[in-house]
Length: 237
Image 1 (tube, helix red, strand yellow):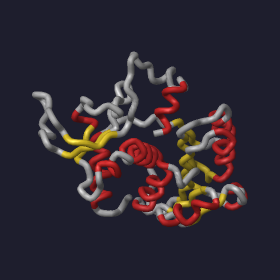
Image 2 (cartoon, one colour; image 1 turned 180 degrees about the vertical axis):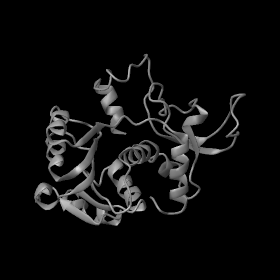
Image 3 (cartoon, one colour; image 1 turned 90 degrees about the vertical axis):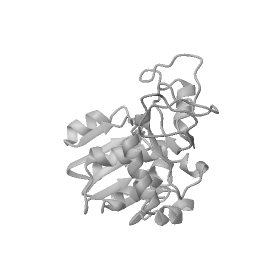
Image 4 (cartoon, helix red, strand yellow; image 1 turned 45 degrees about the vertical axis):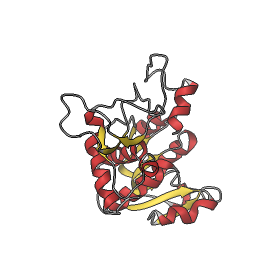
């Protein structure tokens, strides 16, 4: 996951103090081999997946201890390899949409629709009944359409600020200038949640009286259980 590269580079040390040596890895799918005496929701042999607490992470190891509250039963219709691709990006997408209170009929823009988070948030936003627009490169246009996006913009040849207006919500996975320009397409009361942020975003939000926040995703087994249900219903994947 890209966050592992950010940790290695030291970009997250201000918000994620680690004790060394530290094992990386933020997504896991596997089998329960042992449970603690107070665990009630899982048993030995359960097939599970998780995004464990980032202060410990450690999913690149063969074995890992994970809190029960961070764990969910793996979707039956996914392999372990497929399930392991979901926890961090799915929880990021779910929590962003939940914090923005996205509702049926709202207009949502997903920046970087072909990325890990973008590919899931498109599907979840459609599940909630939103009208979804996503940006991507020319080579990924069809891929993003297959996720269910109502409108796909080729950022290499099109300017989204000239094509869109009156949007309720933007999920930004790019940061920088793209984030700053995204305020221009929001309606009054609209909001942006960013995964990367920019130097100017907070000031622009104040000047334009628009909502803005930087998303720090948290581990959550209950939300991951909901993702499992949607995957098994084939509403997401």
